Amino acid sequence: MKKISAYFGLILFLCSCVDVDSNLKLEIADMHQFNQLPKGSIDLTHRDTVYIPIYSEIHMEHNSRKIGLTVTMSIRNTSLKDTIYLEDINHYNSQGELVHKYLSDMMFLTPMQSTAYVVEDSDIKSDLEGSFIVNWGATTSEVKPIFQGVMISTLGPQGISFVNEGVSVSAKTIR
View (cartoon, helix red, strand yellow):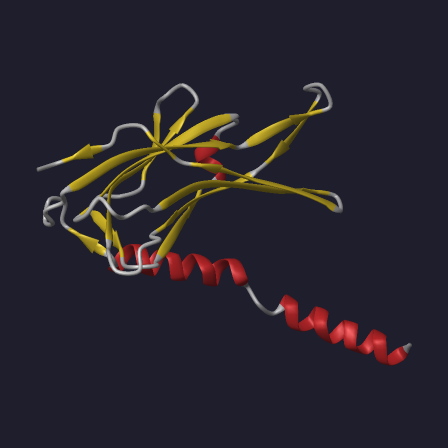
């Protein structure tokens, strides 16, 4: 029993020494910084606008209880050979007001690359529903990236998570 307690204590100690969240934020921030181009610098033959619904909380027990959710918007380039270009990534509240503009320049995702944006608590401001609008493009219409809103929370020993898929709201092909 003493050996089990010692191993358990060692595992807890080692796990407490690692700050996973800050390392993840640093890697994502680095990618956002280095995968940028000036807007309009690539001739994109295919453009699209995608709407991704998100929820910052959900109601339980006949509206008498709310659970706050951590919101992440994920973008995945599913192509094995083509790059996608992100022109705008904007977060809106449930009243349709712009909350946060994530890009000042165009960002690109190389084949099979992905990125994610975690919505900060200060951007939620007790707003139950919101959305992301992503304007993206590619040099071919064959590219089919995945856009998802991922919501997650814990309540005691239980966890809750769900994913909303992005929906194209205005496909445009430039000739």
